Image (cartoon, rainbow, N blue to C red; front, side):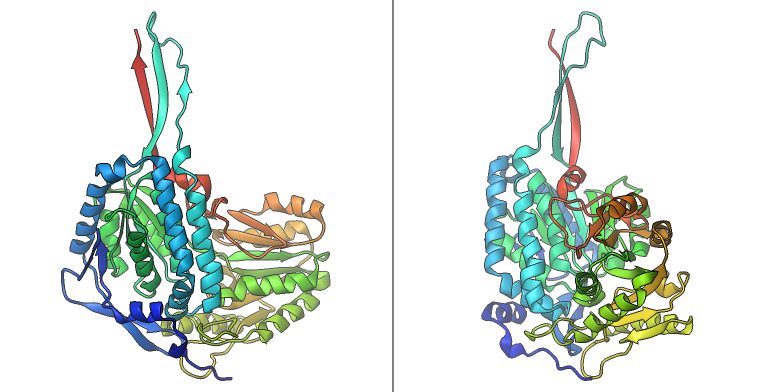
Length: 502
């Protein structure tokens, strides 16, 4: 089996223009070079060829961006902007993104490897929905008045609370769906009147840079959104350590999240961590197997399995185990693998050679521990970093292929007998981000949902983050929540005011 690389002739003019310009940091309204020389390549994962070069940001670049963000936070132009005006700016920004959806989808296809149609309609679609949802919050950040009684005899008080911006936000973005995750952090920043410094992944920075450029075009004041490229151990570390950064919002690996959490305690920063997942998929014996097989396939093979909520552990009630595994394997074999810009592609490449090799090492470890390959399991010949969609059976619950996050197009299938066993198996990892149940019996669903320790439970559905629903996990899947009102709470401080009136 062979695949071809991306056809650059299919790029629209806006995408070409962006790729041809010199990549820099955005600080305020200035596109600036790094304080020191140094860059790293951005690779097209469909071919391994270099798309462009990105400047290697330093602690000095981070400091400059944070200083600008802090000055903007206290600038009356942004600080005193009426909430309704922030709302209008956010809607204008969303409209502009919508007009550039095809361009942004192509950038994600080139950078991440995802099909451009998925980038345009799914990822950019979520970006727009998130921004428009959060645009409703500026006028609703209300405090409360309260009667605090008479703590001092014959003294009367007027007491109330108000909500204020938490301050400068430091956002560290992962490489798998960078545009979407960037907006999960930008939108509440704008809604609450904070400012932000973003450190995108050095692997996939392009769409985030373009998003920041569109923000300026939409009229977002300079300095509200700043982007500094760089490596995690330099630019990212400097952002977490900076004393003027009040909040860190990180999406990425558990190991890095733990380091960030420890470092942030030195300055007692507000921290939100959305970390790894090893999400269980439970198929009961009354499930519609045709619908379930399609949904499960989409949930693990979409974006080549490079999704934190991917349903990678499949638990099937024993009576329908063989049929369900065969149906899911058939779906896997039907998926067209190819470059992101090709219109027929359903599964793109993995993001890098190193990551492809890591995923293959997990498959090999599973096979050595006794697992059986039902379909897939091999590297696909040709340029780029492709792996066949893979289904493994006869897998031990204790094996690393079941316990550890693979972040690739690999699903393991294990049978179970009853609901208690299903819940036990589902909870038997250090993660608790997302989970899935397929059943037509609502009573059994309601019996099972409370037993699963995960931040999300999807029933007869593939994962789709909705802006109004909090996103985050239990256990080592993170701290706090993105999206929804819960995210707004993480970006605001509550201030109590007590006024003596006699």
